Image (cartoon, rainbow, N blue to C red; front, top):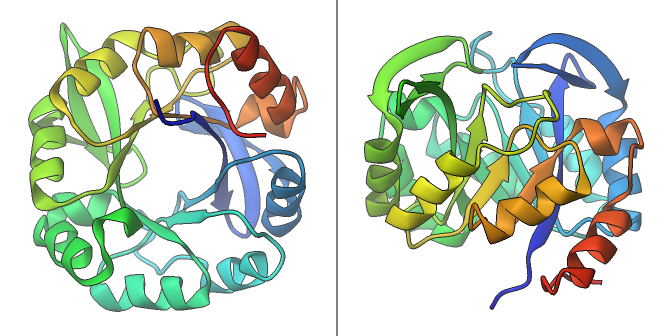
Length: 251
């Protein structure tokens, strides 16, 4: 079994890390470069930067922040937000990103996933999917969680895998920032139909939630923001806890 990755997520808006609940009511959580370096020095397996306003504001992602971070951080860096073309992807990879997270652009032009995975390798392409539950199913949202696409989430996940995405960053908008735990039903359903890794995102608030993301949800990686940004517990706390539950992690 592959070792489970622990990934702090830095949602960035106007050059600052922010965090809210259900994608709204954002509060400042620090400088992105300094935050990334801190996590890199303290046990993170990867860093995820999401420029959450880029697609909605129709602008490019924060390439200067990526370049500065790559000079100071020596673990894989995933970057998403406002990425619409092969040129955008190439520029971010040159700036030091290791993986590119594509969300809204894939919905608007699904060929971007196929072309980018072909050119740069599927290991570089993370398909980010933001969803809300609707009765017994889930619907995909775009533009930083502001637009209901009407797309069935499970159908979209299968499509993204077929197009060549290397992994899925799956966020439950219902759970985001609530600290109620991951949407385990969503994760389990996704992992039942996919062969590529799924990163669990949205709702973690306790060490037990991390464990459940793996043992019940089947996630390959666990992403969190608030609990790390506001020092409720550290990444090493999470790893030590998971190790005690016989879940393999990297130290």
